[in-house]
Image 1 (cartoon, rainbow, N blue to C red):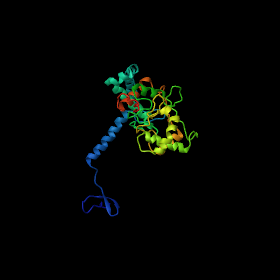
Image 2 (spheres, rainbow, N blue to C red):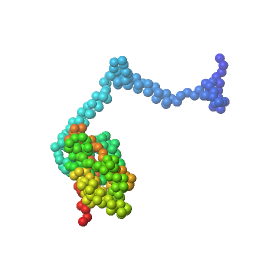
Image 3 (cartoon, helix red, strand yellow):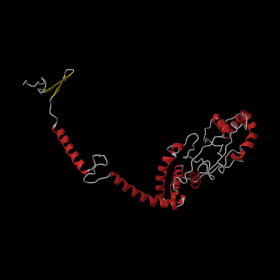
Length: 298
């Protein structure tokens, strides 16, 4: 039998394997590594005996301890359901004002509202409720149908253009698409709306559009353009725009009469959850009383 080859530098036997001039030394594994490896094997055998481990054709080995994470989760869910049941009962019987005024009930309502908002409302209104073109910003104090607790709850319950008789509904005619006004008249009305918001506009166009606005728009938006929350007509004198403030956006709105849809959540959520969501939105919008539409300056 031939003598094992040794590395000339370290004196350690080699395995006989060589790659690109690099020889593999036959060093023993570190003792500490071997103990960990043997310990892992022993631990695995003990785990297989005590805990659920091996799948079978119709089930699995349950282990001597009969541990079941599924059963533990079921117990925890039942406990959470009982805890939430008592808290939900408090929300069910309390008024919105009582919920927001009580620290414990408000904390529970905010937790529930945040979860429900994230799952059902954030896809349109944004994760923080900041809105997007065509989707209202819920973080400010600008509201089409009012921003008090009761008004917010009512909007959540009945929805907007949701197909039920008591839904919030406003009707912005499609003045261009339905050929109610000419392109030139719509261009003049655009300048009139721009002027209402305090920006520089074509004065001649504003003068021409005054009777058009009085005949077609004032009934909803008001003579001074401050809007009417009874019919969901927006205030045209501020700097908040649902579909954009540019002339192109305003022209598009007059031409097409766009209007969004918000589902009705009554029946999908319990009354307690609707209250929690209303409190969450109200608090995150500032939590104050709705200032309402300002009266026009005489």
